[in-house]
Length: 394
Image (tube, rainbow, N blue to C red):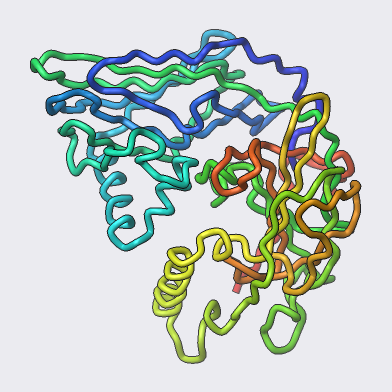
């Protein structure tokens, strides 16, 4: 589970964002700071994700990018440094370019936390480059760079080496403060009873690589034998957790709702006689069409976002994959902590009934930075250093 409020004992050293300007400019998204988490409190390990790095040529002539280096400095002077091969950066940039050509530019927009995509994050004429040599206005993209520090990190740097217009070696750099988020709110878990919490902040979590839901959590209900669904025909109603009440984690106001979404399990399940590879290909193609058509609904299904304010601080909690026809609130409604607002379901990008829960710094859960969450009422069911995971071996 998430580290308790004792995280407040860690005080981040103030570091102002610093950017070195030149022909090549390097940006980070989010651009105000990097959030770190405690991954092993006993051993003193912290981790962080440099979500989206944008390297753009703002000059009037081509420039060749020759190196990309990431660095983290800690509170005791320890430094972590990683060099990223330019071949990897170019390949990732081209992957995003390919998605744009297929009408899936929304994935780059999500990485940039800007619904207008590269044009909104950099400038309207910006475009993706196809090599390490950038023409004026071209950009390279590097995402999901995970780093671990043995002591509390206080700053992160992104350094780009390049050959400028005159063929001379030059450097572009951005330095951002690293912080540990301490919320002013005492959130309660949005469910009651025993649940399997997955996708907690770690490098194996699929959430961690998307800046809007980096710290999101998935909750699954299990039966007496640890199974996720009951015996019988495979359908959402056979899943433990189906229809369980979803509770407001904190007092707040409803600011966003997606409703009317219905899951179509036949499109997301493996069919009789279908190979695993063929099923994966078909399901992926189906999901990509849905993302291109309506990104928010395809990803979240039915969803509720609440606004919370305390002492001038504002955070937003979101609850996704909600059961069809279960939403009990509308935009503008005021809710209290623990109030039932919907039921657990399986709508959106989900193949098994569960609740997706996340905190954000902004009202748009798809284009604002994710925040870590800690619950005031959680209780570990296992007392030990390595609780492990529920597993099924066949």
